[in-house]
Image (cartoon, rainbow, N blue to C red; front, side, top):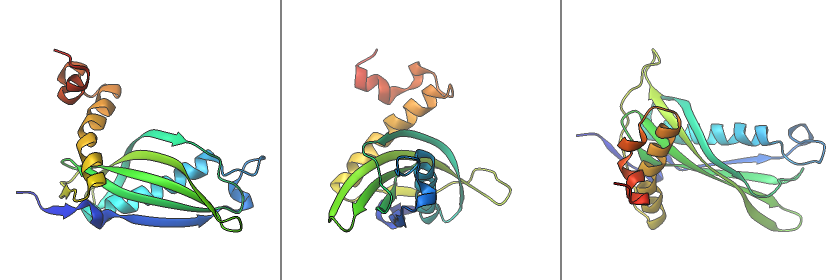
Length: 172
């Protein structure tokens, strides 16, 4: 039987201040810099869950809702949603806060997939992720569908084999 860990044990909060070197000519945080921050927060979450070295396997469903301005405080929250054999899906929420005005808004969200590896870089098994709250359960239940969609889009799974996706579209 696989070891189990609650998904709450993988929770990470990372905070950054948006400085001039992080922005584009409109004084907004550059998208590539945001992706960099998201990758770091998500990797730390996956490492906390697996207690292993992890590598980024995929990034999907990154949404950029609102601009993050120069001087904003950016808070990233990451947590493993589900673990498979050696891979883990991590959900990231990003918040921008303008401290002088007292405003805070959710600006970004994404799902990253990481693979735990041994010292030689070979995939290694990870603990099962156990959701406890309603939100954790909702994300956990959707993770298998998202995983199958990633695998189909990457050409690593045939659409006819994606049982969870078939169920969504009632395909026979």
